[in-house]
Length: 338
Image (cartoon, rainbow, N blue to C red):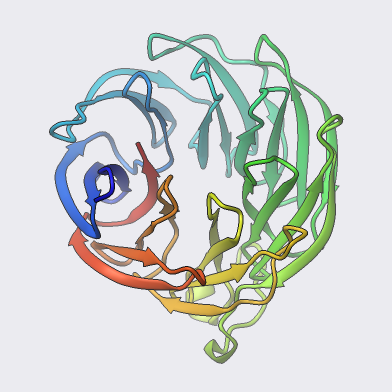
């Protein structure tokens, strides 16, 4: 028997976060906690059992998590410069970084007992969509969909973002979400408009990224075409890439595409670069968010146009087999684990 894992799912249209227990292929909803309007991106401090949730029009809500009941209790709120598309914690939980898509800002806050202090001076890039921090906290990577770029910043001890170094993405690709592999030798970026996973080799000393390859995540029979900023992907049957995650053992990447509602499995070669898709798995309608459990056994997917969450068991070949499906809420868009 595997140890139970808690999963948190943000349901934007309900303003709630659902808490699920995952154990032995079963998905059990423990609670659905009121958090705030249009809640979305969230970051979890597992050591302190704190959850930071972004709400609109521009706030970060701090909640305490009861691991027994799954309930979230709101107890602090801080104002952000605008709506946040992505939140991430530094490894020691002492700083929170966020980016705003419409506002085009990147920012960081110091944390003290779950409360946000005075933020750093913001940096600006068009349509920022995600941010991650290295384990040694030396560097932060901000992804700009509007500039087709990944920008490496030095993260100061005071939380300042300085010394930007730009790594280009293919023009018009619309880079969106980024993940680093466990060794932090590679970065993987899913693109919204071209529907690809981009692989960047990472220099550990300078933090510089070098684009080395790209692999499509678009189902060939779906009849989708290249998208662009401002277009309606539903009306135009356009590519709509969303999220990307890695297997803890580094053997696979998975990426979601919302127009066809699929999750693509991409084997990773000996060099760590993605190979062609080995399987497309139909999933919840409009899968903006999903996640892979820390032990690499399961993948949990949700959809913006679905009220259910599906738990998949991950096969040795990276394939996904549905094991359970439970109700979550309306507008589900984010998945994270404790």
